[in-house]
Image 1 (cartoon, one colour):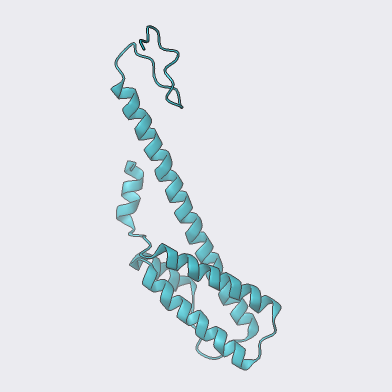
Image 2 (cartoon, rainbow, N blue to C red):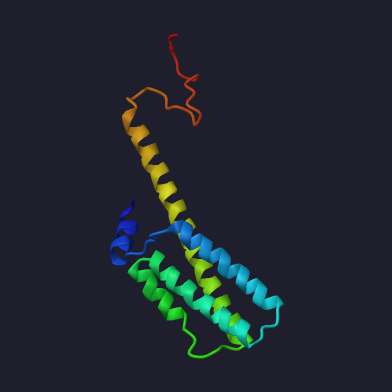
Length: 150
């Protein structure tokens, strides 16, 4: 891990306890948002959506580190009454947006780790080869090496 990444990791303890749970909740909330957009909701349906929304938030918090829980709490506000259709749409869209941002952040972190690991591997390979000996090509071929024996 690079020095910059280590510093960021120490500054904020952002991790996911249960990534599969996070993905399931994200997919469910996204599907609910699509449904809410297409269906008019009566009072009982809005109450049910509020309950699902609040349960989703509770389940998400169980899967997130304390830092991510605090960040999530900054963006979501629990309903104090039966919400209107518009309030449900806004709340669901906000939650989906936050979750998608979180997933993109995870992907970016994984990609950065991959790039860092490849750079470290290349550096290890470079250091392990004695002077004058050709490096391996990407596919491990040494065909360009002079004086190769069978």
